[in-house]
Length: 309
Length: 275
Image (cartoon, rainbow over all chains, first blue to last red; front, side, top):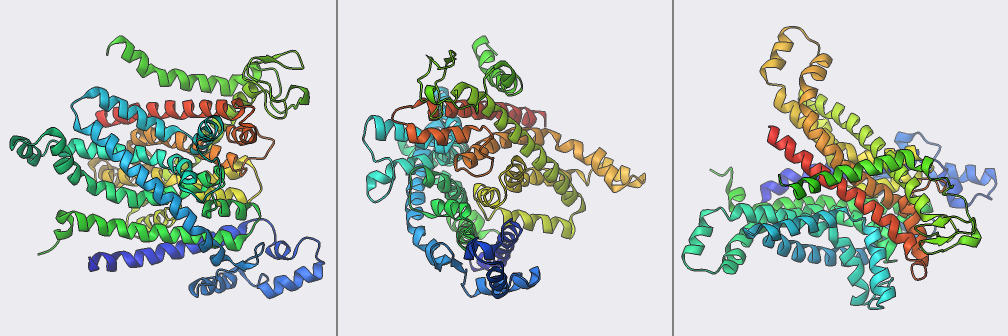
């Protein structure tokens, strides 16, 4: 366990450094003068020049970069010029809503994906397998934002069963979470299907059957348990893609999370917020990749014990 | 294969061919301008006659623009952006991947680290940031989508190069004094073709979805370009009175991506069989 952390930690630190550098370069290459943005376009040229000087924008790029790295290392991500607050505070304020949405979507994706995948992989029944394949192909091909709008049209406007936008109650969470979950239901179902189908051929399944367990008992107690390992890993690895999907879904449902913040910040050229939000998401993903590695070795003794004398 | 199944297997080709035809010929066949606004004919349901005396088979939007015409022009946008992005990503990914796999050592290490850094961001987030901060244009959209789309190509190419560089014919080429570039091009690159074609179709579907997502958010393509994402976003405010504006382009988009998915599944199966 410690060995894995010790091996992966430098890689994680390197990746974060690369992420900081990449975002710094994108924002610096972007057209538009940060000083003009901050002070407003009706300021006099002298005022803009003064601000450029005090922001250090006249210094060479590498010096600005080192300065920025130093700030990031001390936890200073600059101020949001629109909200006049520290950018990281703004971003962290939006994080709980996004986590609520993504965790709910993860739960839906895992439950539905495991069910569909076990049905498809566990039976010799070709029809069920075909049906699940068709469902997963559909789930992966739907544009999420369009699914969201169709759900609003159907459940909020036609049947008036759920609120169409906003957050606060459990009813508000249903549609965004389901919309976000669909492609990941497909991913978990496909993985579970192949994993279950593989486990079905193992000897312990024959043993379980021959000692008189019913087929559902064999499936849940023996096959599914052993098929869970790749699922746990893929859930951790896919969480980043889920955060990306949330950016789009939050905008459909006016969900007050990181995603709607990022899109607004990009549109308003509020670069401090863009940088803070993207780096926070990158940080979450780097940590989760480490967690996936650890979970994999914790759950599967074959991996945990590999390489030991 | 029995007959119904053969028809089913041919379906994605038919649908994809249809989209290709519509993207190329549609704007010629459909006379009207998708951008021309006609306030008299706004929010007409599918099948009604417009003020200009034509039939709006799929209705009109809030500015009186014909939805069918917009879907046809949108198909062109989606297909063009998709093809351009996949081509750009494939060229970049193949080149870097083959070089890294062939050279090994620090070149390979640098490339692998690049993957790690780029994969720390969800692809769509990086695309939103890049397409959002630069001027809106199709070129910027292609670049923004390619930033992460080249990685799978590079991985596949790197793997193939690693597997083939120790093979006899590569050694033979080296012994005969064939240069590195020629060896790569003639003796290693051809072995990446199968998996790369399957990957390209898969990526095409993802890129089309991502482009629609960007346009839906109002990022990327300039407002003068007709794109499915923009039509769907435009219809969102009129869902209650005009369901067709958002619904129909979404169906067109879904159908395209599903067909690409089926096509890519078939290709993947075929490349696996041939190995």
